[in-house]
Length: 232
Image 1 (cartoon, rainbow, N blue to C red):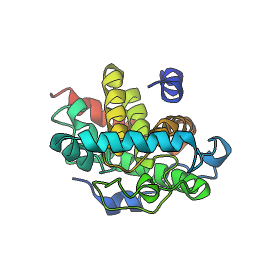
Image 2: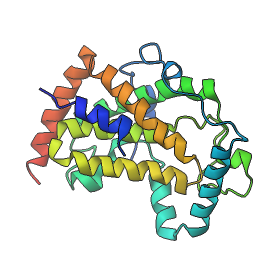
Image 3: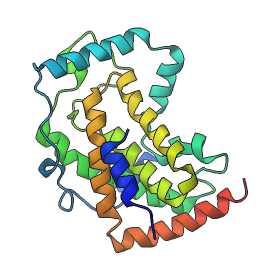
Image 4: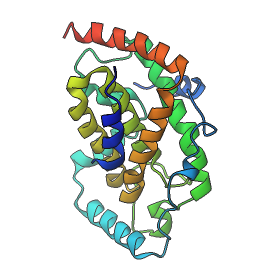
């Protein structure tokens, strides 16, 4: 039996990508199954003390970020499961794991369609829209900032991978935390955006695990992954 309840609790309370393939992949669920606007609170107001404090934090991060941190933040702008290769090992790549690759393309698509509704509904301005002293490392986006889609995806991928390979769960969630932190280093999100993404990821994961097609693809991808990792 999958040890999934503990992962959900952690998410809520704890701390070469083929774009076309991910875009075309069929999501396992949509916002009809998980409407985050019904679960997430509204973001802090633009003129609130919290938003001002978060902008100050981003300016401090920007002033101190190193070239190495900038490089990592830019690399983590990719939305794919292969960003976890540093945790999973040298055999963790798309060429060796085609079933896992297709499976996670669907997870990427799922996060996108679910978070898109919340982003449009809450429509929190990105930090650089409120303060022109923030200089993002990536091409600017005008989509909503609340919640952080990248961070949601990072925690979602860690949830599924951690369920497949429990012995790596702690390291996977640590990597997901770094993935989220890099959105701050890149100047793209407030910290509260990334914190809120943990709840979104938990809700999406729970609903995905209820879907028969998810479980069929999960089983095949897990078997493929474990077979490949046994060769390392």
